[in-house]
View (spheres, protein in one colour):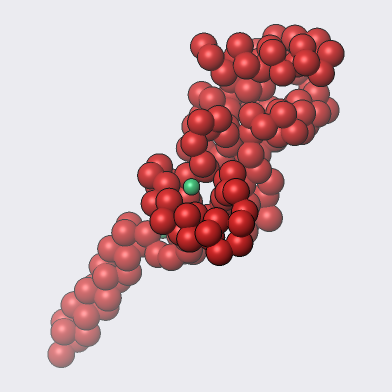
Length: 160
Ligand SMILES: [Zn+2]
Ligand SMILES: [Zn+2]
Ligand SMILES: [Zn+2]
């Protein structure tokens, strides 16, 4: 897999050892794409797989992977430090966060190319990446709210 080769190269460049633990930490984030794990959750998943990695090693490795550009920190306003694998070839995808149930959805298309071009023209910046969160009510929560309304209404009608 390409990303592991890249990881090995980056480690070599920094004169760091290529350990199976470092690869395992990256792999747990790759295998749980879209879940935005915290370091603790990554630890849980790895210990289920019988990888003998200490929590401290996970924390250090997550920091290292972030610094090397393999993971990016995502903040959904729930006070947790979450991470996801950075797509090395594209800009970061957008997140849709439901303010009712906290579910996070992803939009994989960039959709920002025109905005990026505009910003580059206006500011002279060369845009490398961006992070964008949208907050709102997910379809499931909207549906359950309508249901509530309907049952309330039905209850009112049956009282009559
Ligand atoms: Zn994501
Ligand atoms: Zn973009
Ligand atoms: Zn929701």
